[in-house]
Amino acid sequence: MSLELFGLSLLNGLSYGLLLFMLSAGLTLIFGIMRVLNLAHGSFYMLGAYLGYTATCIVGMNFWLTLILVPCAVGMVGVLSEKYLLRRVHARGHLAELLLTYGLALLVLAVVQWIWGKAPVEYRIPAFLQGHLFELWGMSFPRYRALIMGIALFMLLFLIILLRGTSTGLLLQAATQNPRMLESLGYNVPALWAWVFGAGCALAALAGVLGGFAYVTEPAMAQSMGMLLFVVIVIGGMGSLTGALLASVLLGVFQTLAVGINIRLADLLHMDVVATGSLWNVTLSQCAPLLPFILMVLVLLLRPQGLLGARQERRV
Image 1 (cartoon, rainbow, N blue to C red):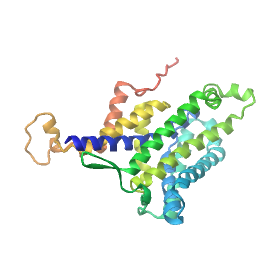
Image 2: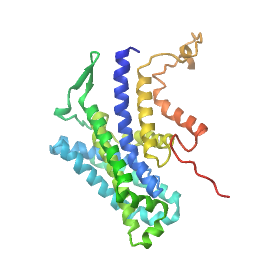
Image 3: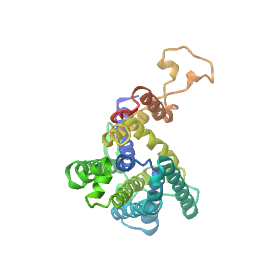
Image 4: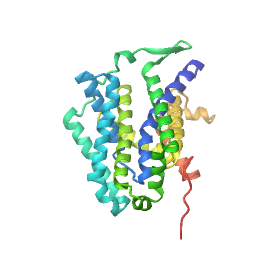
């Protein structure tokens, strides 16, 4: 790989990784505070992409207004889902929560296919985002990728200030550690959890609006991004926001760089393999989609709590 291609692939990997973080931050927030693993999180990402397509490409709404209204709308869907569906099964344990969120994912998928169909939609990049922002050694870097990176970094800064530097963050930490004590002080913990769930869904929808025009907008995007999303939070550590950021960037950079490396596994191991159809003739670029899952297995074997996750002591 040339130096020019390496530099451009690194920037593309960073933008892709930050988009993954934008998506995984919502799920990390929900699990870290509510201890609920939302299997429908990828579906809210897909819903945000389709609503962004409808608002900008069909209705003709301003793109910046879409970035505000679509996450708010999907966030309200999340609030109502927690209040009228998820809250009814909290007392039955994590299995009931997993089953309900899985059913919610199937419901969102059915609604999307009913309204927009099963084929990909033409979610075009806004005119002011078309073209390149700068050139690196003769290779251009798109404006929309720079926008994704900027919004993701702004969102990270906002979450850090909110969770660590405000009274709302202290309240959320108290609700995580001892919700009954917080209720005894007069706070409405169920309503607080509903808004946390809605905020997580809104972050997923924000990633959907941005990722929808950057990648393909289709019903299968919820499943593909959902699988990668859980890989990110497992590698980073369940409930760790900084772990989700680290894992997202690592996966984005590694996977993007691997796509541009057309070298056989046999060459990496200095093996002399000439037989066609052999496993060792597979190139690293062909293995790129498997890299996130390989890294997840290695992390689970070497550090089960994740890269930055806290180790949980078992009580006997």
